[in-house]
Picture (cartoon, rainbow, N blue to C red):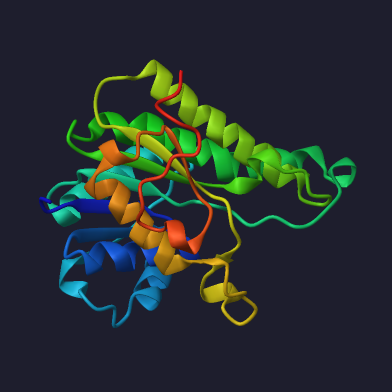
Length: 241
């Protein structure tokens, strides 16, 4: 497998950190991107493989800021051939009928429109041999009282990626990886159960997809268990219409 230069957006989150570690573990180049350079520096201080790690501050708030992030990342690393978007803004537990409409709009902006800006602006800039991968959640098909707004966002995210895959067949392959599990990451390490997918499991699975996207045809992929990490498995079948 040739050297990869992977831009990980949302790198300071639990999932993002696992992806960056896995990329560096493959001896690829990683560009860890987030809103705050201070937080990026704190998160990855002492990270093994830091000679192949670049830190890049920026946001996906608008198409303009997304383009600026691409320019900064490309300048820092010389080139980018793979983009992984792991952006997942926090939300509170609240019944749907009690959720203020502006709060739902903010959630859609932070969790869905950010991915939209990234896919629209960044994927066309990638080489055809690269890969664009968005990270989503498994609540798209669940109704959990107090968390329905999260399901709305995740279902919308899945349909958005399906739409991009259907309409834009040329260029770099596009996938969404839905994490259908609780995540044992830094924030929940103390309360995590053994069966939860870990941040490092997710990183390993993401790198397996990057290394051989043809073995993960998508466009929608799911990671449901620790045993599945790194193994080709698409519960939704072959590329979808």
